[in-house]
Image (tube, rainbow, N blue to C red; front, side, top):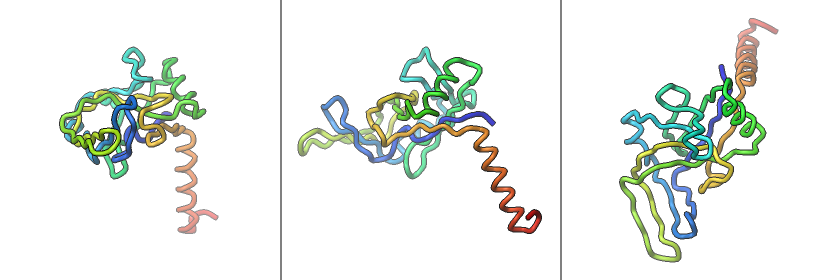
Length: 169
């Protein structure tokens, strides 16, 4: 099992101020329709198309919409310098936020009050990016899960189950 960078690229209904001009939120499942079409979404380093980390098409990027937001799991190529850099920077929590590139298909605007508010209810998703500072800040996340940690955790779970059944002491 390889090291994985995972977390939430978007948290549903959490606001961000975009360029000081409007508040933006994503409704739950805003990308569901587009993801159902099996798009070949990419994962990039800082929105740079010359620095790809993973993609849905080759299985190195997994995306799913759940109750909290748009969950992602990236398995970067550790044979590449970029994959090694991503694992090091996310693993040290130097870089730990996410951003998305999208185009809205259905949106609702509300202009009462200070800043206009936009709720995106349906959108096309092009890429998710690991970034230093994302528009949605800490409402997004990127964390490293090490294969060795996963293996050790699985071994502990198996041993605990065996102890409960009296197979080992």
